[in-house]
Length: 280
Ligand code: HMG
Ligand code: MG
Image 1 (cartoon, rainbow, N blue to C red):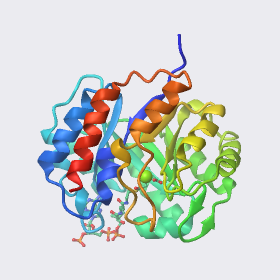
Image 2: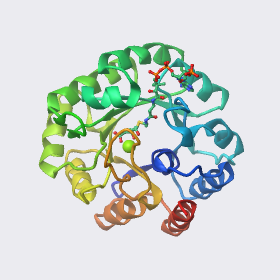
Image 3: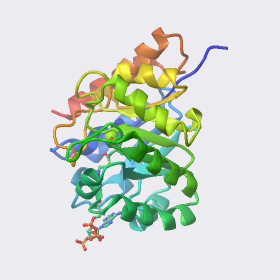
């Protein structure tokens, strides 16, 4: 049997959240419905955050209500606090994600809280969530406010998220500037506190090194990578950050390297065209 890599499609959330012009809910639903037939196991489609902070995601409940749910696909949503979890439960998200930062500057900018305060908000979420909870750690290599991140700071947050009960932690190069050496050093620290099979790589592609960083993570045993169809997105609270690495690029790259993904490249290409058309 060939080795496998899972691509976690995050375009409908991480991709679209950064679009300035409001995208029609029906267009978001059509995009998710197309992606649902491509073979993904998990698609992040919603974000129950404050609509004042991220207006683009204000229709998350309508997106979850409107999509045709495919069997075997888990539809995921971000939840920064209990209010978010309540929204995700009502909208029947299959899994949720809490998100923390390894750097204080980004934590304050993104969720108006220190790292510790944000993690404290996750405690009731972990206790109440009836569904699996994933964890994110942002700024695992660099912070747009604080500069380079100490790998030990990443490991500390990862350890806390696992101790709380996250089933997987996704490591975000939020501003997409990481050098492969930084990812290597960060993973060396993180792998002191957890197994590579419980990690995911979440690399934005601002500097065009995301695929190199994926290669480094593969060498460390990581087999799940977040990606956004069409390379959409960025984070509205990370100045200068470009989109996630494109799903199409990761798919071609890992399949060339001999990994099976179970994904249909033609459907993903169609979804990529839809995503680009939505941006106008
Ligand atoms: P705050 O202003 O400190 O908190 O925001 P608050 O409790 O004072 O709430 C402010 C307002 O938002 C209130 O409304 C609340 O009711 C409302 P008002 O009284 O002013 O009318 N509110 C909510 N509304 C809907 N859903 C909620 C919710 N919570 C409060 N869940 C807060 C704190 C965390 C809410 C805010 O900072 C926020 O929503 N931040 C989210 C920012 C965000 O979504 N960033 C992008 C996602 S993270 C990312 O992209 C990185 C990632 O991709 C990984 C990587 O790349 O590194 C995951
Ligand atoms: Mg991101």
